[in-house]
Image (cartoon, rainbow, N blue to C red; front, side, top):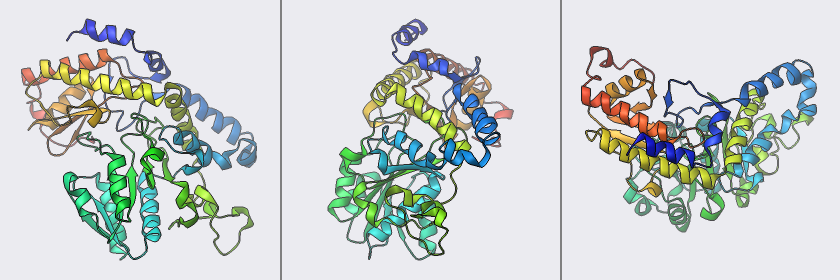
Length: 406
């Protein structure tokens, strides 16, 4: 492994020119795009246009003149193309947590008489918290099963199997098709959280026959901090979908201002409040970049990048234990390692210009956004982390206190 080899791989990379479309500090290797994507260079100008011209000059007319009113459907339709869904099956709105609440409540209504939502221990916490919230209302019952025992835990009481496609700590990928089929064989629905896979890995919700899915816009879709998320429902469920947050934008005729709620047809009924125009405008820029690159090319580069990084880390710092699957097809666009002092090593790496992140209790995590991260980045990151571990530079008093937001 060498920098020369890494540079040769970068030179042959068909996606190498996309890096120029992002604003990245020269002295930073950014391996945290799986938490917050980098800023597309086109986003500030687009936001300025929305603020100065569409809002500042056209004022309220822009709901029609600039088509603000259909932003959730327009951006959702673009995201649909990245996750193997039809345009009319996805809307962009709200946060991932809010959309997950909607999806799970809808699943419970679609499966009357069943209350169990099955997931796995160690799933992303907010996913479990959302189920607990439904449980406190007497609407659901949370059941957990280890990954290898999920299929056996599905019974006639399970309304939905709720899983994150790519695990946020390890990067392990669930077999979406197999688990969806297993859930449906028992009469349950499959609800997928795509937050750590949408925009980095090829997903085909239609081929997997998924029922419902949610995801976020601020990771690999580069929509910015707090960007709107998205929600998907297979067209076969649209007629029976119930939105528990039945706001005016989900009404069949929102500007009729009727007292009684009547759900809009299709996925429009999953909207609640007024669309966040600025957030959706930024998300559209990021989504367009991912679309231009193509999910097949992004997936291929993601696997090559992470495999290269694992090999480089094995050479540079064998003291770190690989916590992600070794098979590139079994992990997402991230690589995680274990070390008793992972937090301190992470902080030292950040101070040295390599931004990864830490997950309690001992996970050092590096995300590879294939749109703007290259092989030289991977090699240099491995070299710097290796130097930190070998020198013991992480074992300093200033790195011992866990007081940083990671």
